[in-house]
Image (cartoon, rainbow, N blue to C red):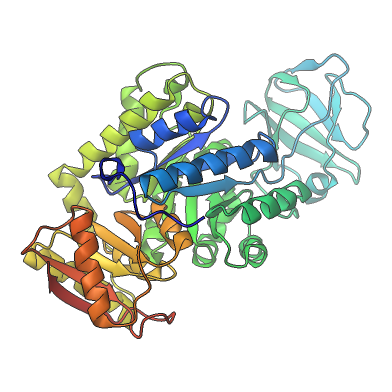
Length: 482
């Protein structure tokens, strides 16, 4: 569906903040009316969680988003978050047991319902990969087991931290790389549906190795950006290569917080954001950002500080999960996140930190041009940088520089405009195909005025790659008077 270019003028929205907001849709946010209000309140991208809901549910939400997009003449990104492998214990004869700290407990391949001494672990790959003294975490880390003996068909463990354990609770194995692909058969079916439905990003779960990213990108074949979710400690061991291969990155603090010691999670978050920033890849900080707002109309002070920290660190986007998918206060959650982000970006300290953390340009003409554009814009106090981009790369390069002024991302492609919805500071607009430098300058002036980013007489910066209509490097920067 192409974006309309004839909206009702009062409906056109432009965010006056740089960091974007992702809102997850679910039972509390399924209708067109609710999704519209979430968009108006501040959501830039909507996440569809394929761990829940049917394809029919997701198709209806995608249709609603595209309807809203056309009505407001503003590209909206859609993130399809595929489930990934879910490792779980089997069932118990009584539905649940209580494991005592210090007791022995067996995990085996026997499908018979378990008891307080053993349970089925229907994942032979875990048994094969585990080693003596490696740990297994059950029920989101509430219980911890240590492997004491290993056989081909079972593991003997000691309960380090006990507690209640019921049917089908999750298993995490933080100490070893599991020989399990990131994409299950369910994921492949979901991926096929999502790509045909025209989503903009695929959230790739359970990434452990660069090969996981390569496989997903081969399946996507350019139809969507691959957003890798860093949620396994093993991914941190391969972080640079995983991010280099990806299109975008998510700091998925849920599972990461289960498998890493709590004191390591903030450091991991900062490392992931820093690495993504260095490579110019959009990075999202997610999970439990405003968790208390699932049931409360206001966040805790700690949660507000958590959102602010992600903004200070330089994240491209912050994400709401259950707060908007199943919470009682979805609009309030988006509203307060919008307010926190906007307030941080008004602070002089935020600009100082952002400037100090700016990565050095890489040794390419494209990065040199993007760096020069930022510097010229700063020097002449330009109200906007207009970046012409076919694939999104020129806009990404300019966003990596974190300029003082907004970035007007001009592209002839709907899909590129939608993908840029997650990128820091970019206000994407779908424009006409251009063939010459004169056409580019004229379009930049017109759109800058139309979007209220520049007034007559002001000077904007125009960045592009010439010749136009050819994928290649960014090689032109120009000052144009509106």
